Length: 183
Image 1 (cartoon, one colour):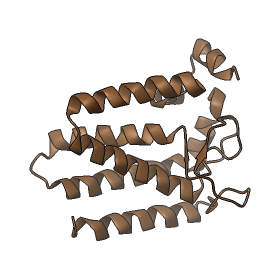
Image 2 (image 1 turned 135 degrees about the horizontal axis):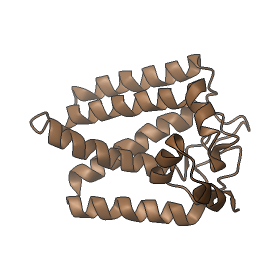
Image 3 (image 1 turned 60 degrees about the vertical axis):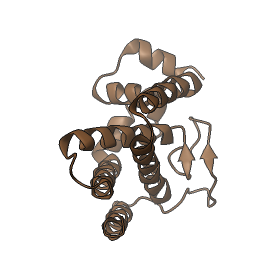
Image 4 (image 1 turned 90 degrees about the vertical axis):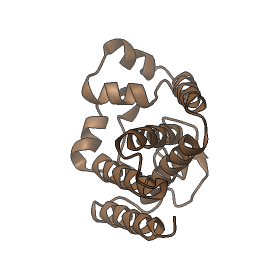
């Protein structure tokens, strides 16, 4: 793990620097940091340490662990984690480009989306890392059960989740938009 840690640190530094250059704020414009934002309609969503979408990033970690386990089973786990951190950082940078921010704004719950704060984006990568480590340490059936529980729980709580987020990014379904628009 010791050899992979500097690589992971560099990837996170590149992620933060790139987001800064894209104009993303370091922390919430409100001027303070909180642990969790529960109000999906809040301007602090995607700005604080964690929010409902942190669960999606944990699931990213499950997926990245599984895929990298299949693709590169002989690569040591710390290096697979470094690759996963790089993939997540790439997504976090892409997610905060004007094109993707605008695409998200077409979804019911993301109409006021302005991108992530740098702090939130880095914590999204930490959430992915948590998911990766859980998938590494837990039996695969437990990991799948956790992913399903998180998807169902978040859908119930905020009418959104990773699956709906991906669907909505590519195509808006009227019945999903109507369901998500209910407060």
